[in-house]
Structure formats: C-alpha cells, structure tokens
Image 1 (cartoon, rainbow, N blue to C red):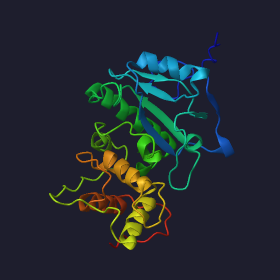
Image 2: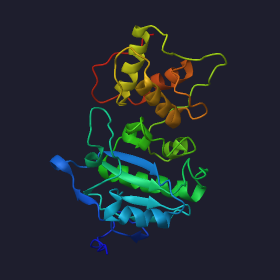
Image 3: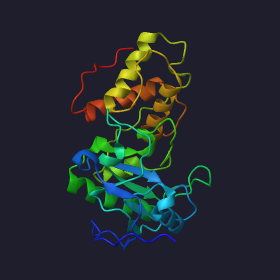
Length: 267
C-alpha cells in the first residue's frame, strides 16, 4: 500500500485542494521556475488523473490539475521538481522539469474524445497561469504547450486549447495567425536545402529543438506541426507554408528571444 506524501501549503490562493504526489524532488542545479508548461490529462476525469499523478508507480506528477469546472488541485509544491515534461527540450534546455511549473488541464484528449475546454476551465487556467507568471517573472514566450517542448511524441493540450484567450488575459505569446492560401503547400523534401535550413533556423531561434540540416525530415515536420497546433490551429499538416512562416516571423518580431545568434529568415 502506497503511503500518501506529506501535506503542504498551497502556493496560490486559487487552489481549492492539495493532494500531494509521490514523485517530486529538488530542482536540479539550484534551478528556479522560469517556464510554464501546459498539458491535458488525457484521462476520463480529473479525479482519475489526480489519483494517477499522485501515485509513485505512475512515474509522473505535476504541480496543478484543473478540472472542467475550474476547480484547481495542487499536487507538488512549486519549489520542487515535478515529473511532467518527460524527454523534452526548449532553447537548449534539456531538463524542462527542473525549470518549469506544470499544469494538467482535464480533457480526455485525442484518444478518448477530445473536446473544447469549457469557459469556466479556461478562466481558471488563465487566472492560475497569470498568478504563476507574475510571481516567478516568467516571460510570455516561455508559456508553452507540452507539444512545443516534445513535438516528436506529444500533441497536448492540442489545437482546441485557446491560446488567444490566455494571451488576452496577460499570459503567453500570441499574434493573429496569417490566413492560409489555397494552393500553398509549403516546403517539402524537394525544396532547396538552403531554404529548408533557413526555416529550421527560425524555428530554432524561437526555441524549438530542431536540427538545422537542410533536410525536411520527420523531426522538422513534427516541429512545424507543433507550432501550427499552438499558433495556427486551423491547419495542422507539418508543412512550412507561407502563412505558417509569416506567423512565425511576426511572433519573433513581437517576442524576440533574449539571446540569439541566428539570423532572419531568407527563403
């Protein structure tokens, strides 16, 4: 029988309940949170997710779970490292768990009947996220989806999550996506390597982990799809079309990386 971990005081006044998770530890190398990562639970109910995320044998955990009615449960203190990001990376950082706070948003996910995120839930996500980013000084461009930091294996919280809504409440990066054009199929494997390399460099400049090799490979397509799922959800095909690239360009203008030696896009 698993012993329930010790109780702790909630970090946010928005928390309705504390349900400690077993899988939590000190952040490595003295890191403090400077990234907020959003997931969906991929389970049929928040109660099932909370129970699973609390168990030692699950090998996972998170800081917060937000139910469809907006109820917020905290499972790991923000000062500790939760196990929510898995194999992931962003802007050269491989240990995302040590530098992030993870929020699991109740939604059954793509395999169990993916649906819209209800207004009450979105309001709660926005309120908690704003509380977190203000307290920790997390920049807008470091409020990310699980799919952003693990594009080869994750698609959550998915294309139905309303990032524009979040940005309107002062959380996260957003620009209006450029409209797609009929007949614009985007770059593919047959494009010149210099053009592909330039596109890869721009995605890397924003923070995505992508090889700059001039080959439109599976990894590149997954990164482009992750970007589309977050910033251009009307069409997610992994093709670097003009609308996707224009959206990325304006995003880089609005939220320039703090440090970058990678140049502007020239295709």
